[in-house]
Amino acid sequence: MSRAPFRGRLQEAVGKYGPLCVGIDPHPGLLKAWGLDVDVAGLERFTRQVVEAMAGHVALLKPQVALFETFGSGGLAVLERALADAREAGVLTIADAKRGDIGSTMAAYAHAWLAEDAPLRADAVTLSPYLGVGALAPALDLAVATGRGVFVLARTSNPEAAGVQSAQAWVAGSGGSARGMREVAQSVVDALADHNAAHGDGSAGAVVGLTRGTTGRDHGLDLSALGGPVLVPGLGAQGGTPADVADVFGAGGALGADGGPVVPVSAREVLTAGPSHGALRAAVDALNGALTG
Ligand SMILES: O=c1ccn([C@@H]2O[C@H](COP(=O)(O)O)[C@@H](O)[C@H]2O)c(=O)[nH]1
Image 1 (tube, rainbow, N blue to C red):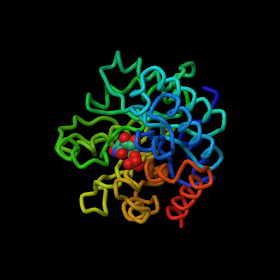
Image 2 (image 1 turned 120 degrees about the horizontal axis):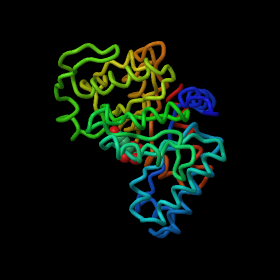
Image 3 (image 1 turned 30 degrees about the vertical axis):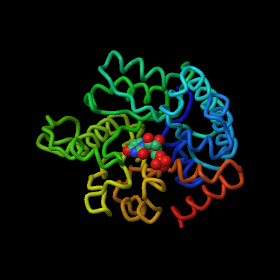
Image 4 (image 1 turned 30 degrees about the horizontal axis):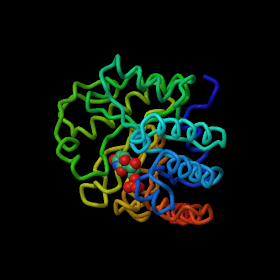
């Protein structure tokens, strides 16, 4: 592996630009609001404008893969180009693909998003643990090998997730995790903590939504041993505010000495400021200012 581990690169980028991750979510309504047609040409123009405006201005970009897939092969070609342009411009990328499958298929997903020779490679990919965190091993291992990262869904931002993620699970215990009953979301975090402790590079991050706290001011998870970054969707269009990020995640202390960074995500709130590059950058500056101020 020739590049530095993902978490170090992320920390450096966050230190330089601020913690905000801008989602590239080309919803049909946004394409229309930007005066673009809802077709592959419109998608390409929209995506290029976002990457151009954000390059050198934001720590990382998170294209929502579903909104490219919906255009078929033409949409995936636009995504591939966007990932390459961001790479060239030095902006970190998270492919929000939410992949998860049995191990043999998972190996193909891992290659698709994290291998050095993969056309759609990103700096990190989002993963779904519904088939078991252990089934994600091909992606967790490839991320370590290629200096990339993963973000595994723990407590997502949507209210419908509570029934599954807040259920109690029997955990056999491995690594530093004790055997016993645990909330499903916490068991995901604990498995990632074990992985990070074993590999020492903090490449395994968790997705913890801003809008799903047990009290509204608390994500309700013990992240102190995670040892990796936290991706926090829910800012802006889903109702979360920069003040909520400070309330819910504190100054990072709750993540333990080796945890973080905490990376809040905003897509629609930032993108509605476009298509002017200046307006997009101003929206990012305002959010980063509020997040760090
Ligand atoms: O728990 C989750 C996991 C992923 N997302 C994704 O983040 C963005 C949020 O977009 P906004 O426009 O800022 O609401 C979107 O791509 C989601 O699929 C999430 O919201 N919650």
